Length: 161
Image 1 (cartoon, rainbow, N blue to C red):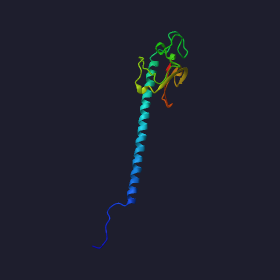
Image 2: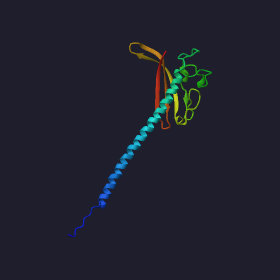
Image 3: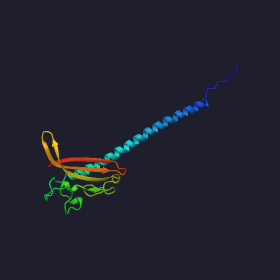
Image 4: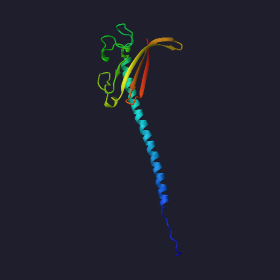
């Protein structure tokens, strides 16, 4: 034997460097997972908001364009005190449902996960210029859905007269 000893282990500095690299890698992966979860959550909220907007737009479009009473001004007429009494599209102007009060076409509440949203409607008469066809009079119905943070989703449809 020559008196030299052999160390095959790690030094304290090498262990600290390895631990630091491992910590940085774990933090990077955690940040990526957190970002992906936030995107999935936003996509789910968007999907729910669009469903609510489409459901209400479907109710609006199911009604006749012209008022049976011959009145053509946005908003409900006298005697149309609830959404169930609306008799044409423009009666929905100004209609709103607050969070916790969202109902389907049958009057049943939407599931709890939809109750965080509020939704409102505007209806405006306007004329749209369509190339090749000219000016088309009609109305534009717009449904706006909001979440508690103030994020909004809007669905708009033009219906020609």
